[in-house]
Length: 331
Image 1 (tube, rainbow, N blue to C red):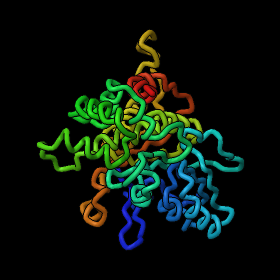
Image 2 (cartoon, helix red, strand yellow):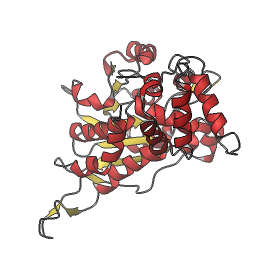
Image 3 (cartoon, one colour):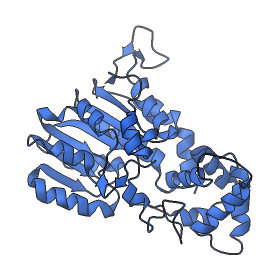
């Protein structure tokens, strides 16, 4: 899920050149970077003096990077410590938004920050909060019942051994508070005879990150808010890193770029106008060269759409992923 990797203290945003070519910042305008991180996309766009950036990030720890850009680019850069589902809270006076960008991966710096506890390589208390959270992974592992734990691991992590792992967690927590090392050991014990290419804990930790940060509802609400915010002709671009994210993004662009009846009860003649125009129906993938220099980029997919209509009803979008949102609210 890593969006970037830090090699020799250098920051490498995934699919940077491809994204820049899509949003065409050379002609000037205001762009919203919904996942500021270390500022790679924002800084590249700000290289052109005609451009402005409004950046968001729920992680307060990126404030240092944001302050550096604020100092360097002064009035052309503005940062908000907000989740992208809170897009409607930003001030857009005198700004016509040309593009809105989402990079859904975690940065190398975030993964390596042991206080966040995002990685199964960390030690100590389970956390996984990215900022502006209601609960931590520790609360989930300590309190969620066995059936719901199994459901979270299965649906959000596609974990084959979800039921066995959930059962062992419930047994173990009777004796002690389960920390990161304990959880990794539980998973290893359940899967000790299984040969896989990825770390045994990858899927469970992914599931917990999704739940703790409510990544499903965040993404759905963020996409809808971005549509409502951007004018016709504006571009919404999303880089995703796992199959659940990509399924949501794909439906958002594909479903609402097709001409269809606005309601199944209306006659065939009453066709709703498309909400997006798609130039690329398939996702844009990293080059072999980028994957070589930044291996975590191999799972990245870039999709984008150009807004063509001001009136779009997203009830079908919400209904499509209602089950995922319900699981997110199990706590």
